[in-house]
Amino acid sequence: MSDLEGLTRRLLIQQKTDEEILKRLVQEYTDFKDIDKKLAYTFAKAILTECKKSDISKVTDLFIKDLLGINKANVTVGKQGVGCRGVGDFFVHKLIANLSETKKQPFLSPTSLDDAGAVKLFDEGNYKGTDDIIIVSKMEGIHSRLSDFPFVCGFHVTRACLRDLYVKGAEPISIMIDIHLADDADVGKLFDFMAGVSTVAELSKVPITAGSTLRIGGDMVIGDRLVGGISAVGVARNKLLARRNIQVGDKILMTEGAGGGTITTTAIYSGNHNLVNETMNIKFLEACNILLKKEYLKDIRSMCDVTNGGLRGDLYEINYEAKSGVTIYEQQVRELVNPVVLELLEKVGVDYLGVSLDALLIYCPESISDQIIRDLATKNIKCAEIGYVDSSNQVNMIFEGDEKKSLLPRFRESAYTQIKQEIGEETPELKVEMEKKIEKAALEALKKRKRIIDYIKN
Image 1: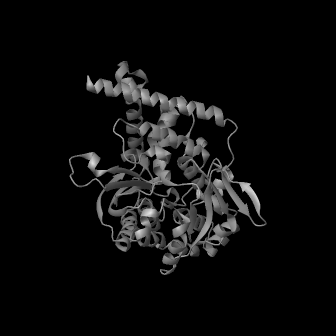
Image 2: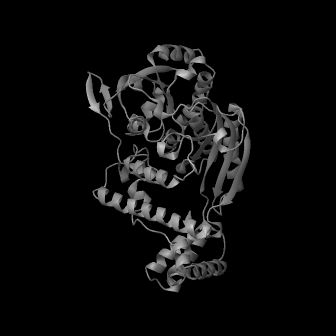
Image 3: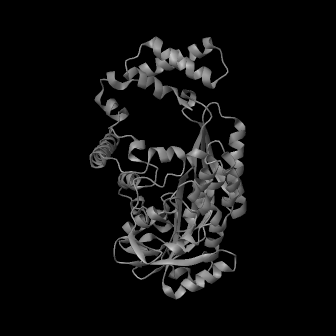
């Protein structure tokens, strides 16, 4: 995929001549499209003209300049590891959560860093008799490396989205789709993605209710990339299984995991295509469906999924919100990972504790832990106790031989493809300096929000 607008602006900053820019754009066009150079030149000239005319550096109206301008952090998302489900990503998401805060407070807000968000229906209007109804919502982005494999892309993003509703104790009632394709993507790619989405919708009995289909960047981006996401809405009653409910002494159970989009990506890009089928199941959703119907649901403190930061990252985030610590037994965790998937990860050198396993974590009192394990076993879903909650404020893991180690998330999730391994998981030397710049940019965005609100109100 080629972002022609971004490329043009970059070349203008580098003070390239018009002819140099046009030549480069023509090359991009002829690489991606079956058109002659004359037509490519016409397109290129239009792009260059638009980029020059839309340049705000010459705008004199200070309000418009403020409105359209960006308070840059001068730190790229790649450098900071945004989206890579490690310490760098967690740092940025805490700032994003702060930006989401308004005077109207939800029941479960983004600042909780939980799997989903929620509002009480009674708080949203004059809905008599709805004091106990909680509306839970979730937005899930697709796995970026599955663009060329749209069916499994659609399948895994939809399953992951519903997963995050279920773990809060909500029954999903609606699936919505936002899908963007670059200009040269085959229309069949859209249909294959939709088939993957609707496969999960059919199996889970949750209807698709709305959606949006657009091109990435309109005419300014060429190529065949697919990006977007799935959102879903669910309903819970009386109680939300939020991380803040967790108590010291709770047992931690985990179900079997074979992974989703991340494991699929690992298999495909390591040339082990035949292992993708290991991820094609809805056992996680089935496990949640069982638990949501049980009388002891009221006694379960919280449920979470082992997602893209892996167990290493998730436990760190959960501890932060629950203000507690955990002790985990590594051997019990290992035994719950699909053996074929575990063998794949070890073969390609990926730490299984740092990637999504599509496993369910259940925090509950000891009094119901054995019953939960037995109930899931009746549906052939493996589940076992992997540890307990303590007051250490740390993730402590006990390995074979009773060796106890403090488990910390890395700057990025486990590198599960070759390019990620080349980039590495290490913390950048300038981490503190980068964080200061990012915090400043977030603060400036908050100030800008206030300025625009005041302008509109007045």
